Length: 398
Ligand SMILES: *Cc1c(COP(=O)(O)O)cnc(C)c1O
Image 1 (cartoon, rainbow, N blue to C red):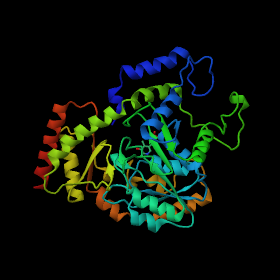
Image 2: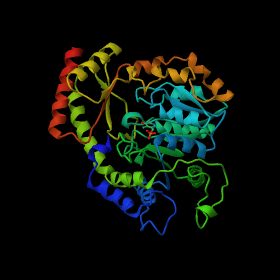
Image 3: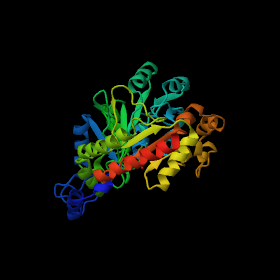
Image 4: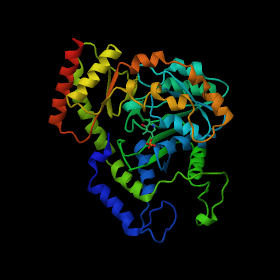
């Protein structure tokens, strides 16, 4: 991450095609568009690269998660189980469609703790949404089993793990629906954008129409479409899709670069005392977007984090003290500070958060440091960075 570091001629060329025709919208205007269908082309590339039947591009990753939920018919009064370590977008997308996020502990994979998931299932649970944080995944075999036995939908928020895999399949394709973000800081960027992928024709059809005002896209033109259901506008523009098309074609290169940089740093840290790496579930391969490790305790992690900062080691995060990614600082959600009135179901549904504690997750997030792997680093820089990191950690832990 992030793809914007390598914005170049290929991206400019795709955008220029769109500018030449002036058709900035993804649907219609067939005669004017000079054969350019950037959003459709990008959807095809995603389907073939991930070996998945359907891709529906949208305007953001947050929109993708809301759309995935809506496509599965999830809404008011329904519960969706998610981890307490995730970007705020995961619960925003659930609240947006009126459903209740049921937030549970994580484990040393830095994503859903399986026992916590089992304990959280009620008669209102409709979906489980693992978030493959920082480049690696939840124990998907276990979650697939739970979803089958309780008849629940599995939605993968794979926004931070594009290019990772599990049992040889692309992340995002193991659940009923998978979501990716193409915002400006993700591994592949559209500027702003996202996608929902699925192998299920009904879910795809729902996603296609819900994301475009309920249009069934079966008419001879937009005016002739019918509207089987109420929909919304989550469309991506052709300009954004054009950037993403060029970027997505470079995904394999991006992952190779991430893997190379990740491996250099990991090898340097491998034998340090008092440091362990995050657990990757069996059968999983990370996207190498981040390198995650644990130190012995909260105090050590804080010291290492601040020594990294003062020694020029940027893009490393101690999420325990961060506002965006960990439940500790989501006061606005806990106290239901909403600009718009929330439904009774949602208010009641969220009230558990006033009391619930997350000791198990505190234990992992408190000790975790998460280092972003950049694409634009030179190899010599990565080698130097790795040595500085190792020497800072050993000076603090010894
Ligand atoms: C980035 C991100 C999103 C949301 O994506 P946007 O495109 O910024 O709306 C959702 N979930 C996770 C885990 C993310 O990292």
